[in-house]
Image: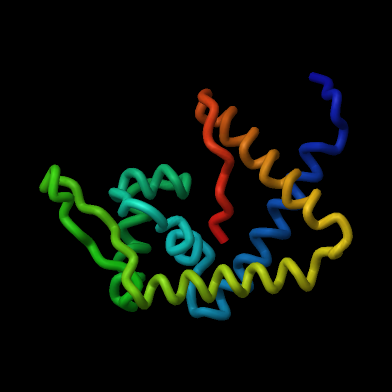
Length: 151
């Protein structure tokens, strides 16, 4: 198999590795795992079910259950029965969890701002958003709205 864009996969693999390393570093500062921090950052809008959150995080519902348990013990999340279907449990971010999510996002923004060159940053942001949207579109098979940053 040949590619028209040599180095594209390596570039994205390198970006993924470095973003994950940075996210691990920031999560540890707050006493969280990277997955717990990502879970907090995924909670915006309507409270998701365990299945919806597992899908957004790309993991199994059993993994989400353990993360929710730990984050709930710390006061960052709460479980809520879905009023339309009492069999469904939704995950709600608490006020304390919202504060933690804001701190994580601010720390991530600061680190990126310090580490990335300021020149052409607007173009970089546009390219990253376009790339994330294209990847999401092709993952689901249907066009999606532009991907919102979660960090």
